[in-house]
Image (cartoon, rainbow, N blue to C red):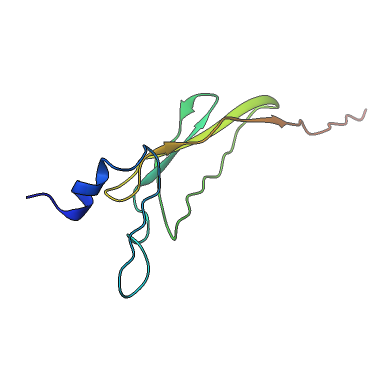
Length: 99
């Protein structure tokens, strides 16, 4: 027997965030899963969602142009998704020499 969620799954477009009204309010709940960040197409370690947020600290990026993006793994209630690429430029620190 299919659950209501399984029956409804085919009715929604891919990537659409499905919500269902419950007598107590709310929807399907808080998304779970992981977000993988990519730097210049290289995947970084997956980061778990905490309070609907995932973040990463990047160190060691060289000066110049880079492309950042992210993908969400999805869970039973929320579809996986991916961000559009974000072009960034990292400046280099000024250096001085003395004699």
